[in-house]
Length: 119
Length: 110
Image (tube, rainbow over all chains, first blue to last red):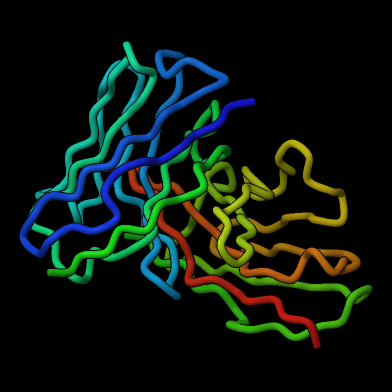
């Protein structure tokens, strides 16, 4: 059973960089899967941020592309999210997820971590 | 970018009743690219249906998905108390790769 766990600061200052890590257990991040980040502002819907493949190819949501970097650390079996120049609008619960084999849906999710952007 | 519109916004039903949730796409979507999720308060979304009609691992058979083109439906045949939650549809688009979600339908106990 694949498990994902997000970690990182719960508070980030405006104009700063949000950095989160997703630790994967029960499976190898080097397997033939893609791995995604999704966020959900309080009381609102889901927004896909981007994805990274086992071979470190990336795709980003065009609405966030200029500020997002997703990377992979195979030695630690984890992947990370960096979101720069954050504002209060980036306050959300951030989830990491596994893209289902064969693609096109997200079959395993972390529990999510709330990141608040505030001074 | 394809926009997904879910209706109704809120659906009030009683346990044992049948629930029908709609997801309409602004352009035609391949059935392979349409999924449904359930989210309960304070929890991560859970994949229910992928490929428009395939149940994910461990999902009870009272959940079913159908549809094609621009109109997709999630049906819960007989509501159990644990089914009251928010449901999201999601589609996958290419060039560039992009997952988009509908705004959700809240299924509440009547």
